[in-house]
Length: 153
Length: 153
DNA sequence: CCACAATACTTGTTTCAACAACTATGTAGA
DNA sequence: TCTACATAGTTGTTGAAACAAGTATTGTGG
Image (cartoon, rainbow over all chains, first blue to last red; front, top):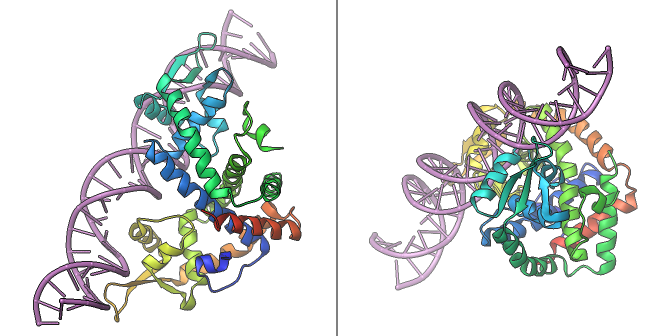
C-alpha cells in the first residue's frame, strides 16, 4: 500500500520532498502508536519512558534535569513537571548537587530501574514485530538515509 | 553525525530495529520542528494545517468531519473542537448534509483557501531546504523503505 | 571584588489532546 | 413496524504540552 492509497487523497504530491516529508510523518505515527500503547500497559507515557531510557543509558545512571531535556527526542520545555510526575510515580528521585547548587541530579529509583528492566524484552519484541520484516540491509539503508536527512537544513 | 553522538548516549543499541525506531523518531522531530514553526508564522498549528491540506486535496473541497479525522496523519479523537477552532479562525465552515442529517460537511472558506495557497510556495521551499540535499534516488529509496515499514505489524 | 551576564531550574497561565460517555440519526433484521 | 445496532458527531473532564516570566546560583570582565 503506497502513501497515496493510505490517506485517500485525490491530488498527487507537489514534490518528492513533500512525499518524503509526509511519509516520515506517517511512519512515525505508525511506530509511535504501538509504542504509546505499549508504554500505557506499564502505566507510563512515551515521554516518561524516554526519560527512564535516557537515565538507564546514562553514565552512573544520573543526569541533571536539563541534560535529560537536551537528550530527549522531543523538545521538553517543561522538564520540571515531567520529572514531578515520575517522582510521584516513584520511578525517579531528585538529588541536589552539592558542587553546583543550581543543579539537580535525577536518578532512577529501584522501582524505576526494575520497570525499565521489565519493559526491555517486550519492547524488543515489539520492535521486531514492527520492523522485523525489514532485512538488515534495509535497516542499514533506512538508518543511513534518515541520518542524512538530519544533516540538512 | 550519527544517532549515537546526536543524543549523547553511552550504551549502544539493543538492536538494529531499536536504532531504526529511534532514528525515525529523531528525524520526525527534526522535520516537524521546522514545519511547526512554519505553520506558526501563518497563525495556525500543524494539526490545523493538516485539516486545510486535506480539504484542499479533497474532491469538491468538502468532507464529513470524521472522514477528515480518518485521513489525518495523527489520530484525532476530538475533531469537533479542532474544527471549532478553524471555524472561529474563519478558515473553514460547517454545512449540514441534507441527505444524512448525522453528517456535517466541512469546507474551506475563501480565507481558508487563500491561506493554503499563500502557504504553498514557502512550504515547498522549506521542504527543499529540509530535504533538498537528498538525491532523487535517495528520496525514492527512503520512500520505499518507509512504506515497507508500514506494511509490517 | 562587584556588577552583569549566563546557567539551571521553577512556576503561572493558557491552550490543546486523550478518554469516555452521551445524543441524534440512520440501517437492518425479526 | 419495532427493536437493536451502527454511524456521525458532540460534550465533560482530566491531564499534559507550550510559552513566557521569575528565582537562585554561578561564572566573568572590568
